[in-house]
Length: 453
Image (cartoon, rainbow, N blue to C red; front, top):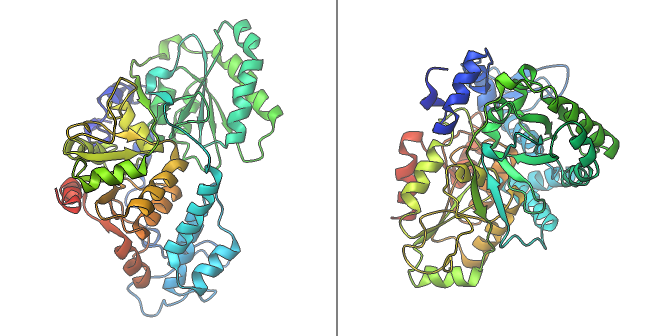
């Protein structure tokens, strides 16, 4: 773990990278490097595991390998593979979505729009304006039983909120002041939970030695699982049908785990930043774009991807773009990333966030991952002419769904991560019309060029 800067730009976690090395713990970066080079067929989208006749793969350079065993062409193989990936979200694709996309030639964009419509329905009435949340490893408290939730359903989050109150006496009997619930990889407007890290930094939360329970939902990356075996932390997986009895059992196990903390491994952090979430006044934003008070809008999204230096590109883009009277808007996992570096506007007194030149040294947060639908509504309302969306580290199905939908609405979308589509000429052509790929070294300059700044 010598090349710390190449792995992440976060100076506050250097001590945890070194701690992992000293304790002989292989983190996600170690595992990524051990697997290089990655499977070339998979990176092109030319692999299939749908039945036990395979797995199949099609050589992109061989005319003899034109179809899989069951007869799928390269085009079908790549499309089906990406459909499986997009289906890995809480808003499942159904057969009607797939049939409609194929019959009407709407492809990826049609599928993404279908997913977004489901997300709009799920959070249609939610208001986030004025809600404040803390972000950073410092939200883990030494004298509390700390629980971390990653990509669990709202139902499970509600169970945890209720049960931590009901079991407060259990926590006290174990010597703690109570339960402290945090989440990884998102902001929680509907629940009073702080955000401990983005999805790519949850390993560091475990390395503090203060995490007693780590629960991962069906769509979570769960990188913290790499560290859990070396600590007292209880690991659990919460599917959509997790029962209250099961969740209560996890909390009771966490209370016992609290008493088994290794004091020699405790390494707390002082990293805490605050963010205030905002609502979007679409009419005011449109007016300020027209009169030049705002030169443009930059939407920041996407996860943390090991293929590039973690957090580097989004932070470089923000420091360059946000100081030029561009209204920068973020949400979910990316907001957590920016929040831990202090780039999100906090709850200090302010003038209107939508008026006045020189008022945008920081980024505004509009909510959780699902609140990307508010940004899509904004684009559809005011037009996409002066809007760019940056997804430097596309990682999850939800990232791609958001990026595709914004692109379909006319927004220029930029990423530094190649999608597994290059095995299909048709799919490559389709995605090239929607999402612009550029190398990490050119990313920030290309972002500025898209905004014409």
